Length: 554
Image (cartoon, rainbow, N blue to C red; front, side):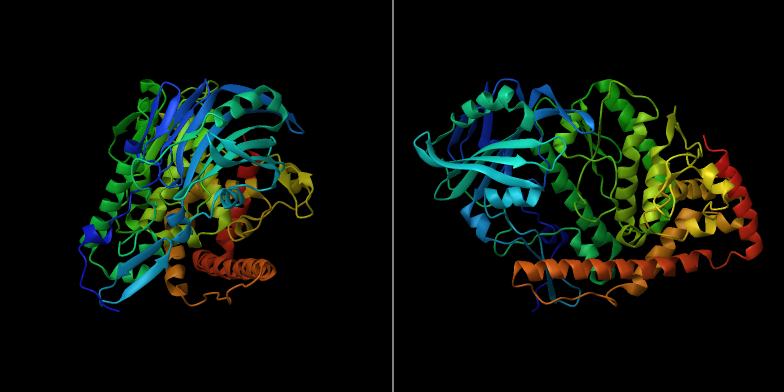
């Protein structure tokens, strides 16, 4: 199939008709209305509006309780604040699919399938919860409308949670209002939740309800354009690639601004869109620290790619409860999923805005910068190095306008030997079982996490003075990219479509087994390329120096 060449602005036209359209809903006093769908309900006292993530296309509104409850469970005390979600699924949306259509230089079309829409509230719970069961489902009438009252026990969460929900079905949409509360504090919150659920009223919609999906004939662009279709993407001129990514950034920022409540502040810095619910002082300190670290990323890794690095959203919350419910993450799982996710932190009374506290943002900023430069850095860098590097930048201090990485080593305690026993570095050293630096830089399993972090601190610190470890990280990422380019589409894993649930589980197990074996092969290839040039004499020198480094752990 062929098509005329599309302009970048057309190619990246992202459909922004998400369910939380700001012009369609209002909150006056405690009464929330959604004119587009004809919904009105009373929000409980003490519940405040919190922003939506841009990719929460089915959630129309979220409200967080000001009151904190403590739950007792096996590991001690856990704090939780009630969360209310209003979720709307249109019938048209439930039947659709999010399809991406792109055009190549040769005029051919390639298609990528995006996220499958939800099939109602039960499907929504299944995809977002683990260890749950519907403990109660009663048909009832609310505001003269046939409805389903549900209770869901999330028994495997810590602390255990309980969902009070009502599902209302209309000809053009299905709405669910969900309260997430503590299982062992139901007596404190149940009446408040039920009162709000019973306040729901439905009238004739003001306008026809439309589905928040990519409509037929529209073009939707995502990061799959340069991940799943890497070779086609790299053939495009650099200026065109930059225009595409800048257009995606503009539309992402516009959607984020639109979903931000009035009591949050929105500001721009050189490399971030800053959305804050914290004090101006805290916001300024976090923003300045983030910009300082971003500059370090540019200096260290700017040459690893040519593509424009889109400016991410920096989300600053007023407290830990708000931060958790927004789903922001300052850590990094080094995944290409959710590449538009926000980088966030919150004000903590224990740390305030100290130079060390700013570093909670650093892992997220680093991951974003690296995967924007080249996604192969994320997909081909071994797990041990991702984990160790996250630990390394998280230990950085901000002192004035400088970063202080203080190559500290914290490997003395909390180690686990190969038999799973808790040991200290001194015990391992005394028994001649301290892992070798060469082994730590090449292994990729779940053991010796702290020792691998120490290995990275060593090569980034005292070891960096030797040619063998100079510019270690940059060279490692370059090697990962080279291995990825060679490996691209040559070892793909294909499976027949599953027709039963059992086949689906078997396919998942087979995929996991093959993925693990393939990752080990690639890890070995990267390690060989990185470490092959170091001779035995050099290794002996560094093994001795590394042992001393570990034993001086702070």
